[in-house]
Image 1 (cartoon, rainbow, N blue to C red):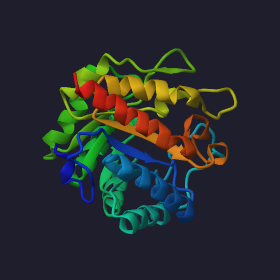
Image 2 (image 1 turned 30 degrees about the horizontal axis):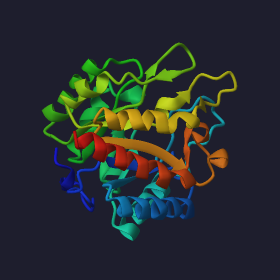
Image 3 (image 1 turned 120 degrees about the horizontal axis):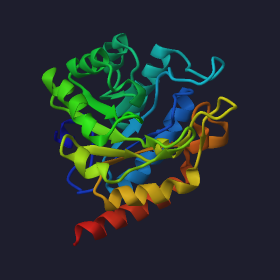
Length: 272
């Protein structure tokens, strides 16, 4: 697919990777606008095509008392406001067939969570909205298996599919990124590396997922060197108090430096 077909996306002629970035979940309007404004300023300066990310609800939680959202429509309206305020596209994940049509009214890219990427009805429903469909690779799936998820989107009449690698289960409480999978998945669709979820440490005894944010730059650099088309980074100005996935999010204050170095690495790699 052509990146410039996404409404309001900028810098598509810059030969940069594209970026999906924002908070794990929409916690409120002020926080969403604050994060979007900061990331947009950085990506405009670096000429990085940018899509604001925010989950309108969190359906996959370890505990029943975990934060799941502020209300579906309220959160989706905030995503729309981000898009209209800053003239940028947005992405959110969906969990049920009925979510597809609802979310498509508010955002430009629909994301299928890794745990649900084999759910045919969900993938087809997303594809039939006509939106770009970002397919998270299941933690339990091989890179080669993702060609079937992409084909489901295409067979539903939609050529706009991406694959996002978010690590593979390694034992019970860790994830690992197999960079051999990137060129394989790029044969099927543009491929994104989800840097922050790849550093989760799930299945903790507390019921709260852990993470290794200290390794974000290591994973991101390796992705750029191996020619990923895009990066996915969850970021927050106060990760310690974020309502979801704070343990593996990037502190917003570190984003500019990270992206500056990654752009330089990509430029160097492409000069060979």
